[in-house]
Length: 261
Image (cartoon, rainbow, N blue to C red):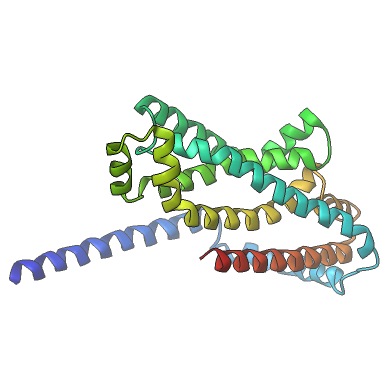
């Protein structure tokens, strides 16, 4: 009993030690980024107040012109999510230790996914705009390429933690690798994969609005135009329109997740 209590005490002390280190790291990071510079905050308040006064009330006079860009943003998010799924599932199977055919393939797949995650969508958007021109297509490609690195990683982690007994039974019955995946692996992880995909779709809508700023189409292009013309009342109106769409997309995602449970 004493040994159990002593071990529990040691675990708590280790936990407190790690918590203290994380807190210290957070404080240092805030200091490095200037968060504790009160003079800088005080100097920025008048400019913030001025900007707020120019954004209120929002100007919705051109709202009809925003419907098509909002539709394009929604289409970009759906297409980007669909392409992400197509790319992520095979890469996840190669990046999961229990389904990868060889350790070298496993390492290459994980390196590829890390490479995709390391390049932000906005940079990929600039590159694809230069490659295929303006419009929604470069946005779709940028979303899919970046998100594949993240979504495939989550897919692989879900696949890695499946119950091994069905896999062992399928292998013992003489099933091929493809049959093991389709009959023993995927049925266990499909609900998790669906959850991950829906969450990513919700994220894609918000990211699509940002990609429009670099010429990838959608409502972000209208937002950037209003900013360049210093029409802050239109900027606030567009932001409110984006917020309304984000709430709708989040609601649809929540409904889909409930339906899939």
